[in-house]
Image (cartoon, rainbow, N blue to C red; front, top):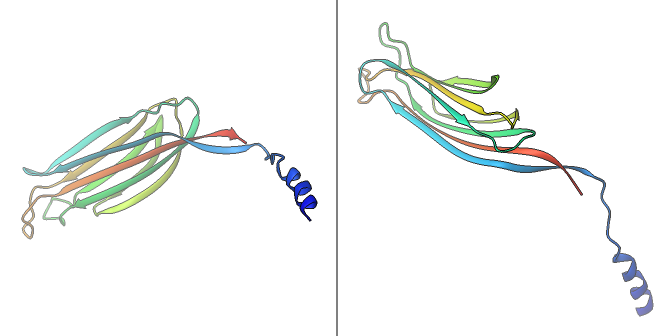
Length: 152
């Protein structure tokens, strides 16, 4: 019995070979946030941020966007405000607009040798008859870029 166990153990020593496949490697893990509160007359707000990638291949941007927002209802000629977020690389890759809080999880294919722009456009008003404070938003982005590589 011992001899059989020793002979079988020798077979177990051989390395197991796997076929070549694709593995995902994280190239960037970035956090960024922005906020604004309207405290004077109704105005618009615009912002553009460059999200620079450090790799030179095609990849995937996994983006988690957490939005806390309050935009009061329309009053007279003043419409309800909103927050518009766009992800741009040569053209708009993804866009969404809201007047409420929420969370978006987005997977976007990107060319990581070029900059990705996150653009925030918002409009709001400073007060509402039924509110003690003006419109506001707070947005937090967590972006992870990954690329594929051959692995064993």
